Image: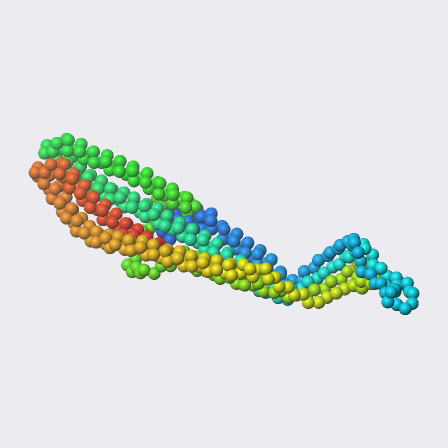
Length: 441
């Protein structure tokens, strides 16, 4: 009885282990299947994240924070320690002997100053208003940083166009390989038919040789396509920073029916940020032509101190309000402002040129999209007719009224029709996504 129970428990454990193994293996298969699928959007995102230039975003932010931190300290008290020792060729003297009615030793009342003088003092200055200079510098720093970051965005956006070309290049190769597989299947059906006819003595061995030649042609074409696919995948792998195997399925992007003419390219944002930069420069020029006001306190030890008639070393202190206005910048103010206005006009011209060229490119792509739509409609009809011709050709050949060359020609014509339909669809999608790339979507 104990043996039966042990056996039952053993079988139960084995079943549990078996089911757990099946579940784990199934999960691994699902995870692997998910890992072997990738979309166009994923490639674009990974390529942007992997591109080395993206690291400059963080570096620009760090540099901006350092600069703004320095600017923010302009209103903090500024302390300094100074000293000087001088020797003068002459000093202030008081001579009253001629004016006084009696004879006095004037040096007893007004001592003569020493020609060697010394002073050591500390000074604390507190800026009250800097004429908006620090505000202008902060705005200028932020505006300049925004322009630099937007230039990076423009460069990263260009990567998107390269990813589109590579991605659709792989899809085009894949479609050709699929159609060659179908063509091989059709040829195999013809080969099987010829083999059967050879057994019955109603076909020639050379007919089979011609079929074999077509198989070899397919192998050659597959070799060329594999080489092209490897090249596309290698480039795509480098861009996204991870290996894309031949087994990875590249998902065909969705068809987009509604397209508009709105342009949302990052270049437009760059032009706007350049205008903001010039506006900040204008504000900075106006700010540096304003006065500054501040407080100061100075305390020191020297000879003489504040009392110029006392020749002894003394401590002293002085404080007050300091006002400063530099008029030298007024000479170049007008020229600098005119230069900024000219730069702003140049940005306007660049923006108009960019919009003109982009609209022109979009207008060139729009007829392409419609062209492929029209071609695909005809492709369906051509494929149906080619299939009927091929079926008729097989029947004629079987009845001995059709040559093998004609049968191969009709079979290949159907294959070319299928390839054309598949290629036109990929080219149609490529044109749509190229149009959106020009738009900035």
